[in-house]
Length: 257
Image 1 (cartoon, rainbow, N blue to C red):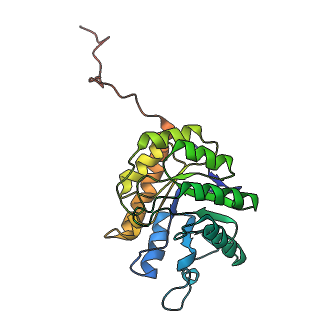
Image 2: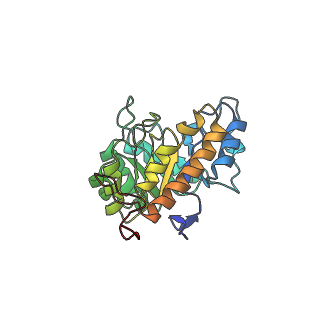
Image 3: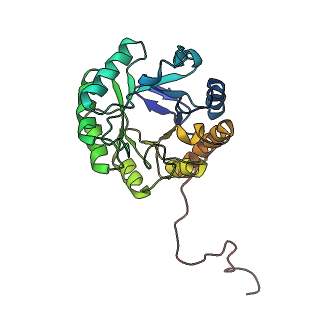
């Protein structure tokens, strides 16, 4: 079954898995996990670009191979997030940005009003805005109308590993959206990623589920396969759910009945 590529801001990507750079035990493990994931987009928190060792995180990323996606992790106001995106562009990281405006330090849920304000401003300034938001179909539509290139509803709180908590909301967001839908946050294992894709998501973004696994490299490969399987299953079309059994080998029409 043939498929189209994921398109964000006019760029095409054959991989529908986006991965991050935080929480790995070493830079070498991170690089091996990126390789195993098959990802083409790698998120980079602007506040983590400079490492404690004095190195730059960018020294460990092959920018000829991966598209870097700077994100505004740790920003709590629209102004702070907007300023961080300007700095990323000035640093040569491009205009495609993952936009986070956090509203609560414990849950890391987004401040959707600040997010909407920042999306409008950055879209107007020519950025390809990818906002991390609640799994709220109404807010997803408002972000799209504000100029978001994609909408990125959470599956569950960041780093929680709880999996998709409101699958019907993700399904509704996909139905209403005219832009790609990327499930961001909450994935814990491969089945969560497959479910996100089966619900119609165009891609899945994750970090902790891979970096925090006992074997990050193996988990990265599992996530790659899960995303592919979920996408294929979504496009193939599942059978309807039924209350009672339906024999795989029906007896109707058999000779001798």
